[in-house]
Length: 358
Image (cartoon, rainbow, N blue to C red; front, side):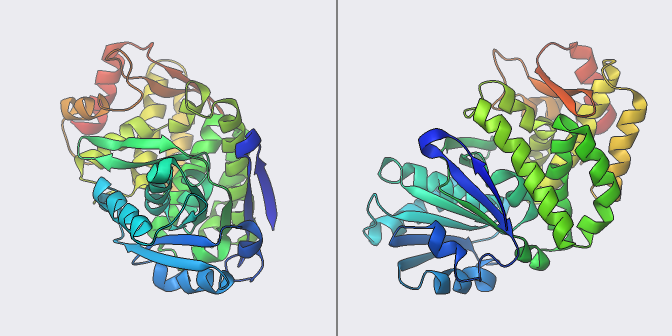
């Protein structure tokens, strides 16, 4: 088992990464002290893993909530459903909410925990690659709004993150590829050496090689934890983690959160952002091609859905990173180095959107 500490003082927590951590009978009970537990999962993941969690915590009171599966269900209505169960079962402030599933479950369960009695503890048991490398770490919780993605939420750090790599064997290939998009993001923004490692080991990751997966998850979490320590509430540097996301969120919103997985939209968004970086003279065209080839090798869609450039601009304007009406973007200065800026010519953004959306 690999262990990484997110050293946030009183809110510090461990990230545990390894094979069969949900069923070893030791890791869960040693990591969770609460006696009253709400287990939030969805209709896809719960039949696979909920019993393992219950067996490991058999000396505790565990109440289940099973939500429908899919990004389109990350809504306030389902937060209300979770809160109703907490109230109905008289959970106190010493209770704990477990998120068992992917990023949707983690975001929604975490937000519910942040709201209930002004904040109760929660733990992340991510079962998708995307959630293991990204959304389970850092304390961002929330839900979508028809007007935009993740517009309603709170920062609420988990008590522990337990990433069982064995759960990735039941993950559909499409979901695995979507998770790889976030892994690639860390390399493009922070670590060109990691990018080279990914290019060498991509086939191993796609084949679910346990050692390769553990390394990719550990390095991704390590890079994210370093940024969270310096900027927990996304006032500056943490915004770099949104590379590709402003374009990607526009794609997800335009398609109603039903046609594109989050990682797929981010992959297309990263290519668009790399292309714009090249248009501005920040990145050589050969590096854009390197990004394109890696995303293609990972089996990720790089052609965004058809919509007008003006519609894409409108949707990007609802993004949380907009300030004073100006869309701020994460652009690449080089592979492994990025900047967060609103200082770009408007015609460069317009030309980029026209290239990909019109």
